[in-house]
Each structure stands twice: as structure tokens, then as C-alpha cells.
Image (cartoon, rainbow, N blue to C red; front, top):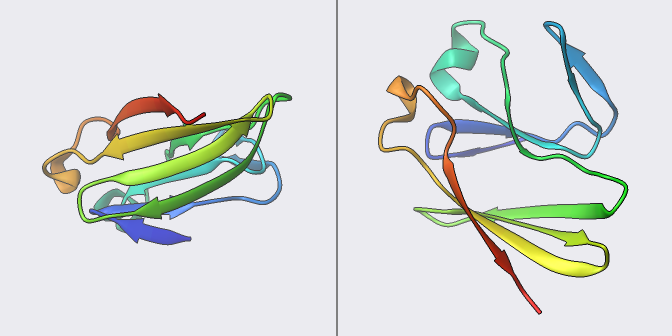
Length: 101
């Protein structure tokens, strides 16, 4: 679990069912901190493993969340940018995908 720009980040190791939604083990999930404190549990999936993907890792800077993973043994990176005001956000951060070769 971690925090970034008003978002809580979770990585369930096993498949997880929460309020009728299935999240795959190994996913990277996010929820607005204020929404979590209000009791909401609807997560945004930032990364979900597939048969071809694995090894999700993430780091953050002040303005970006950097998510790296392997896709069919090729390194891929997604750069997430937070919404200006996570507390009043109506959607997830935006993403820009990059392929690192």
C-alpha cells in the first residue's frame, strides 16, 4: 500500500472481491483517499496482469506515477498524471504509455 497525490495505491497479492467487483492478484489499484475515508471501496485499476504481463513495479515523483511491467518479455512503462484535485475527482488519473526497448 502506498499514497500518491491524494490517491491510495493497493497491490493485492491474491484475487480480491470487494463490493461485487473482482480485482486480480498482482493488480495495481487506486482510490481517492477522501473516498476511502468515507467508506467507498470502488477502486480504479491502473494495472491488471494478463497471461502475457507480469512484474508490475511502481515509483512516484511529485507529479507522476511511473508503472513498469513486462509484456511478452518487453519492458513497458505507463506514466500516470494525477487530476488537479483528487478529492473532487470524478475519474482516475490520466495515463501515457511508453514502450522502453
